Image 1 (cartoon, rainbow, N blue to C red):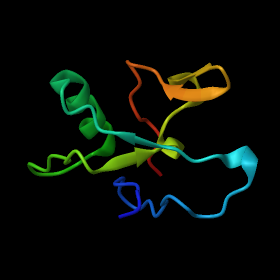
Image 2 (image 1 turned 90 degrees about the vertical axis):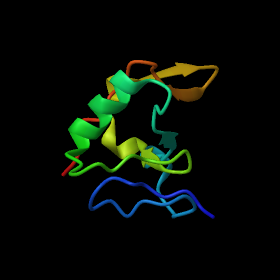
Image 3 (image 1 turned 180 degrees about the vertical axis):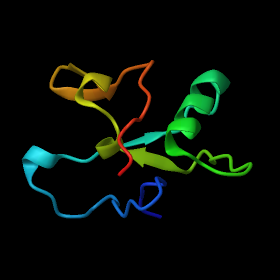
Length: 87
């Protein structure tokens, strides 16, 4: 099953054609860090008792550029990153 973004109103999925300047990556929810998970869900404005599964992701479009670090040309999500872009 291809990865897709779980953010409300986001239809991004792995394998969609995009220009190289708009590279897309997917990040798992921090299920083992309850404090950080609460921040992610609050930013997403999730209603009810929804809890993501280990198979659900958010795409890189929901994170500010400062949420990433680069090592050896590879983009990684910082350990303290919280998604803030939900339009």
